[in-house]
Amino acid sequence: GEDVEQSLFLSVREGDSSVINCTYTDSSSTYLYWYKQEPGAGLQLLTYIFSNMDMKQDQRLTVLLNKKDKHLSLRIADTQTGDSAIYFCAVSANQAGTALIFGKGTTLSVSS
Amino acid sequence: EAGVTQFPSHSVIEKGQTVTLRCDPISGHDNLYWYRRVMGKEIKFLLHFVKESKQDESGMPNNRFLAERTGGTYSTLKVQPAELEDSGVYFCASSQSPGGVAFFGQGTRLTVV
Image 1 (cartoon, rainbow over the protein chains, first blue to last red):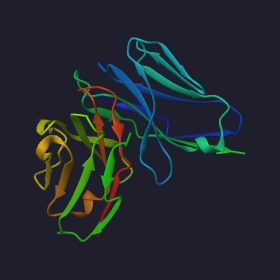
Image 2: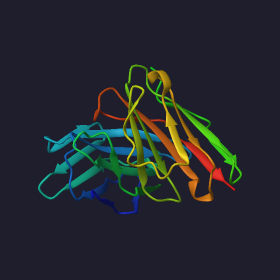
Image 3: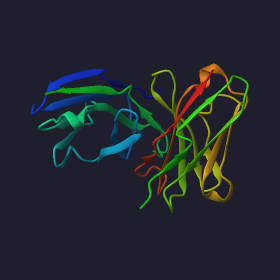
C-alpha cells in the first residue's frame, strides 16, 4: 500500500529558510497536501499542489513536486517563531482521491 | 464561512462506556470523512460519506465503531464500548467534491481510562 515518509524533526533559526521533505511510494492524487498543526489546534490546510504542477508559490511558502522521484517538499522562507508546528504531508490512497495517507509529521522548531 | 466543526473538543470516558462524536461539515460539502490519530502514530483514514451514504468504510477498525450521517448533513461517530486503545484524536474533514480539497476540523481528543 501507499506509504508516506517524513523526517520527524527540523530545527531552524528565525529568519532562515525551512525545507520539509516528504517521499511517497505511489500516488494517483489529483492534489498533494501540506497540513499544519499548531499545539492544541486542529489540522489547518496550509497549501496543496496539483499533481500536474512542478511548483507552487504562495507568499512565504513554496511547494516543489518531483513526480519522477515521488518527492514533495515545502519551503518556508523567512521562518518565524509562529511557524513552529507539526507539518503533515498527505497524498491520496486511492484513484478517487477520497482517502488520504499522512506522513507522521515533521515537528518544526524555530528559535529566535 | 464556518469551517468544519467538531464536538466535543475533549472527552474523557471510562473503558466500556459509550461516546458519540459529532462533526458538522462545511455547508454544501457532500463529502465527509473521518480520520483518527492514535498514540502519536500516523493520521489514519476511517471512512467517507457522500451525502448520507457510506462510500468507503475500509478504515473502520472494528464493529465497535459506528458512523452515521442521517440527512446528509452532520455526522456522528459512536464508539461502543470504548477500549483503552481507542484513545487519540478523531478528525473530521469535508470536501465539495470526491477527491476535492479536504478541510479538517479541530479534532476531538478522546481519552479512555
